[in-house]
Length: 176
Length: 202
Image (cartoon, rainbow over all chains, first blue to last red; front, side):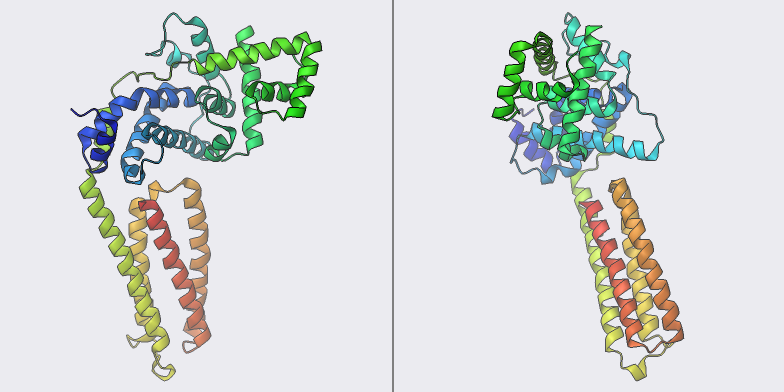
C-alpha cells in the first residue's frame, strides 16, 4: 500500500478506489470531528461525513494541488454541512438538533482525562446552530471571518456577532 | 459580566483585530476595570481550550462501506458525463438548425401543417427541450435547492412566453415578429436548460 499522499491523490484522481479509501482512512477522523461539532448530532455527522467523501470523489478532478489536500477536503466538508443545514431549514422537514450530549459523551480520540475539554464539547454542542457553526469554524478550526462569511452565505459582521454571542454563552455555561 | 458595549471590543481585542486607536482605548479601560480584565482572561482561556480540542474523532462505525457503495467507478462516470455533454450539444444543434430553417423559409412557403417551417421547427424545439430536460432530471439532485427554485421560476416565465407566442402564431402564422419572439423564447429555454445540465454535471 502506498502512503505518499500525492501519489494517493493522483491515483484516486485516475479512478483508483483503493487509493481513495486510503485517503478516507487518513482523513475520516478529522472530517467526522468537523461534522460532529458543526451538527452536534452523531447520526447527522455520519451522514455528512459520507456526503463529504462522496462529493470529494466526484470533485477530485478539480483538485489541482494549489492548497493542501486536507484544506481542500475540509473546506468541501464545511460546505456540505452548511449547505445541508440550510436546505433542511428551508424544507422544514427536520428539527435541527442543538444538543446531543450522548454524541459527545466519549468522543474517540479525545483525551478521556480531559474533563474541561469534555465540558467545552458539551457546551459547544448546546449552542444555537448559527453561533455554534461560527465558533467551531473560527475558534476550533481557525477560519477567518471572511472565509466563514463566504462559506455560510452571511455577512462578515454577522459572523463576528455570532462568534461573540457563542463565546458569551459558552462562558456563562462553563462558569455555572 | 462586562458592559454590553464593551463585549465586541473585548472580543476583537483578544482576536487581535482591533485598530491601533481602539486597542489603546481598550487597554486604558482595562487598566481601570477589573471586571473587563477578568473577561479578557476568560476569553483567552476559552480560545486556548477551543484550539486545543482534539482535531480528530473517529466515527462510531466504519463509514467506508456506505461511501464505497455510493461512488461510481471513475471511468464509467466520465463516459456517462461525456455522453450527457454530447447529447446536450446535439440537442442544441437540432434547435439551432431548426431556428435557422425557420428564418430561411421564404414567407410565401411558410405554412402551418406542411411539415416544413413552423411545424418542423416546433418539433425540433420539443425534441431539444425534452432531451435537455431528461438530462437535467438525472442530475437535478446535484444542484443547490436555491438554484432549482430559481431555475423553475425562470423556466415558468419562459414557458409562458413560449405558450403565448405559439397562441399568437396560431392566429398569425406568417408574422416574422412573432416567429422571432418564439425563436428567442425557445433559444432562452434551451440555453437555460443546457446551463443547468452543465452546472449539475460539473
